[in-house]
Image 1 (cartoon, rainbow, N blue to C red):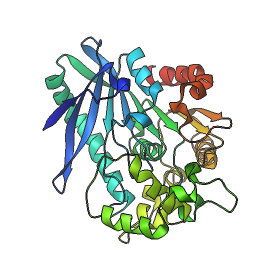
Image 2 (image 1 turned 120 degrees about the horizontal axis):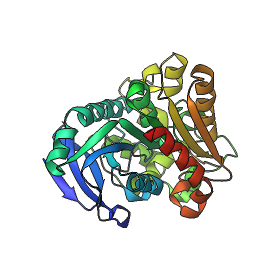
Image 3 (image 1 turned 90 degrees about the vertical axis):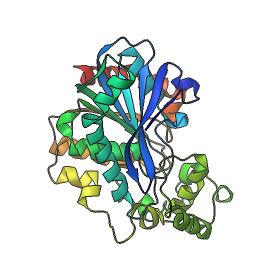
Length: 329
């Protein structure tokens, strides 16, 4: 079953948008959205795969507030078809392992079933998988890194924005250190109590959800602020984070990444600290020195700064030239 939508957002107005189911979990359909520039002529087109962020627990494939404007511009400027994945939102019975399973299923579906679906929905349009750009921000950056490590030779370029590549970071395990900025600038009165958040976790875990909004964010902030995000959300049911769920450990163990990587991260990020990207970059330089890597540090910028045009503008030209050249070479 598929559905067609304009997504109801001005950001998506230049695109024909439709959704297709790629798997079902407990009678809940999990979908991917396909965005095709409206003036795109039939032919073979480069591909952008987007994995959305949202604190691992919210957002969805067409959640406009967290859909990078530069990514949409890249698709229009270079005649690309954009594919954006939903996945089960945490908390789930098995924690992060459930999402990793979903995104691997999505990746296989995009290769085996999506091309035929695209021919049915948009005759004459084909996907050029030799020119595939994988994009992820925040939690989506974690998933994009995971997918990239599993399929390094299938990705021309990897673009990560403020990626949560270190799930063992103390901010997730123990909460922010004394004197550190509050998570995302939320004050105590802005977030539920710990007891309220724990009740929310138990109720949420009983249902399968793959789309969420801003109402979930305060619970995630609360659990992080109180040092319970890892054990209540990322891990559960005896499933502990292992090397397979940890990008830094996978790189240390000798796994490969795509040959072209761009990362941008604000040095004032109040939830995914800059040190996560810095550790990833340092490790890539050590273990994979042949990688064509660009790392932009956005001075005095917080999480998701690139959603605001004025804050993104100083980095746009050079960063997007690097990405386009690497992706389309």
